[in-house]
Length: 310
Ligand SMILES: CC(=O)CC(=O)SCCNC(=O)CCNC(=O)[C@H](O)C(C)(C)COP(=O)(O)OP(=O)(O)OC[C@H]1O[C@@H](n2cnc3c(N)ncnc32)[C@H](O)[C@@H]1OP(=O)(O)O
Ligand SMILES: NC(=O)C1=CN([C@@H]2O[C@H](COP(=O)(O)OP(=O)(O)OC[C@H]3O[C@@H](n4cnc5c(N)ncnc54)[C@H](O)[C@@H]3O)[C@@H](O)[C@H]2O)C=CC1
Image 1 (cartoon, protein in one colour):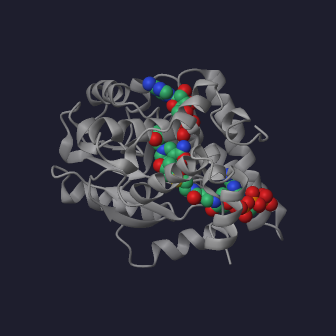
Image 2: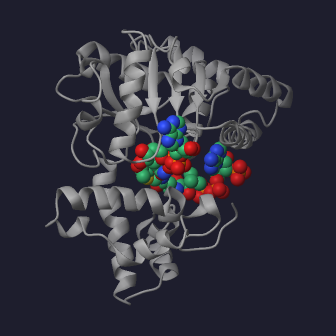
């Protein structure tokens, strides 16, 4: 059974976990993941600044956060709607929006990057943030597939750099992968673990290996499903039905690919293929490429392998 927010926070603060030193969090990127991370960080009492490229995107992100919060409140405060309203306004009060990344990090204890899955763009961002943020600020990337060490080289703070890999939808998925590179200091890693726990997540420690734990297993599985359809062995619908009813997965691999975003899946597999061209599980998929070229990126645009509500 889920606990009311105040009880949840009280239980955490008395449970003997390491104290969370992180209060002010900047999230760069307010898309699918950034909005979810911002929502949960704000819901657990952190002061959050969410950054994206323009106010239109930020307003859409905030509307998505409000929609998701309404779903949470409807369940958690079913018997006390007034407390639900108070929780909602408290969470929204913890959330600020910003278009200037350099300004957003001035008071940050932690910066979490959740922008497009592209090494050069992430490096460029972190290079600029490194100059703008206080020396004490910890940097983390939510990348699905890019080595954290390759992003961290853009900065002078590899000891204060790590990976925080969340799962979609962030408010529902309990896991957080916490990744360290050889340079990550023990102090930084402990702070990242404590922050993850303060967000209510169960953390696992990961090395900086391709896809960490979950995606190294999940993405090849999703791509194998696409290849099965490419070979004409089954339809997406039958594969999804089979995996839900025969293997107990909450979503079939095609539903999941639509949910994650076909573009994100393509970025992941193309990146791994470039690094490991002979690995059969990392081979690009003509069918996935075709859908992406047609703009069928999944639920976020209303169509991927299936048509969906935006
Ligand atoms: C690519 C990467 O790098 C890493 C990744 O993220 S990989 C992807 C990992 N994610 C997964 O594998 C997701 C698999 N799917 C699931 O676990 C489930 O289908 C799910 C949790 C997403 C939804 O649960 P469901 O029971 O199938 O569907 P649904 O009926 O829509 O949701 C049930 C309840 O969950 C809650 N919920 C679902 N999504 C929510 C959201 N975004 N915000 C808030 N609450 C939400 C709501 O309480 C909802 O009830 P209401 O519809 O009454 O609001
Ligand atoms: N989609 C998923 O299920 C998961 C994705 N990830 C990773 O999270 C990251 C983000 O993915 P999504 O949220 O799905 O992408 P998305 O496309 O939904 O959102 C990305 C957002 O970043 C913004 N952005 C791009 N460049 C920016 C910049 N320089 N400054 C500020 N904002 C910028 C875009 O405007 C967009 O709103 C990627 O690295 C992805 O691999 C990790 C876990 C799950």
